[in-house]
Length: 478
Image (cartoon, rainbow, N blue to C red; front, side, top):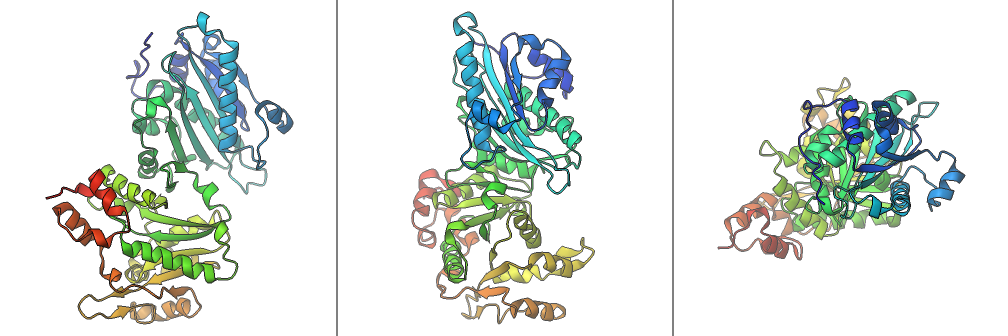
């Protein structure tokens, strides 16, 4: 039997929380459980208070005691209870119980769901604001496999009660969105903030999986999180799945390479390989506890004034094909990127960049919003464990190489530059290939679009083949 769920809400465009919960409760077919750990039972509370919950809620629970929680859902290998692994175990267990205890033959039209969250709110000393995982596994037809939406949130409020209330709101929005807005995932992201102050909570990871979302690329949704200002940075791995930045960056050595990667060229790969070589020669480098990130700024993706999702996906596919971890950030200034990394690690941070990028860093116009100007920015940028790996540029006409010793900054800032340069904060990348240095992404992109030959050798192995087979960047062979 086919049951219609998605579609416009019969009430106003932005229904109240009570209206959302009531619409779920009044649907005779939607039936499931709530399992909430760490912030009360704020989500379930909305469904109880609006009325009609007996036909929707099979069970609510909060297994706060760790021994009880382990007895129900099993132990976590890493000992963490606020984790994606814990969330998935909760959802698996609760759906399994529904299937086991409710006779499908007597409830043929039932659409089962399990909602769960595992959260830690702000601590008593107010040193850690708290964060949590939240998700729903659900059906929109009785005979279909389950689909799932999971998300990670970071609290911004400084009061535990306020955080609990906010969590309750976003939980209702998630459940309502799963059943009635699943056909438009990008819109659903915006609806998650219905009746919530944008400054109250950050959503930094979201994944849509299952048959309902077989055509959804979660990398596009990650990009949407940054574009909408829900978070400042998102990450995805070589397999294309979204990653939680806090988990990936935590206590890691970080090497970040910023670029347009439109497309990724031999120069980008050379910068990457040479940076790794320099880093591994440093004491206590520990490659096994290090992460290389290819970072693209949101402003770089908006060079035409708006984000071209197809263009973004072309870049993402190429970087993922090379086995790279990608970050999309809203950090136009490098010092903001450094600040972000320092939230999660006290270990080494290395920023790989070209000479022109370093010269731009010394442009004072970028720091007018800071009371301390460029000095404040550089205090944040060049802190204890940060260095710049500098890739030189070549003058294609004269063959002149410009590196850290020969680059020119504004005379007023020369002494400032020398201070960082001679304190070993700027390290030149040597052993470079002068022919590769003459490769520019913009020239390669133009050749690709025009269907010319000769650009293939300027890209890493396998990249040109992928561009041709997938017709990336508007490739049209002559």
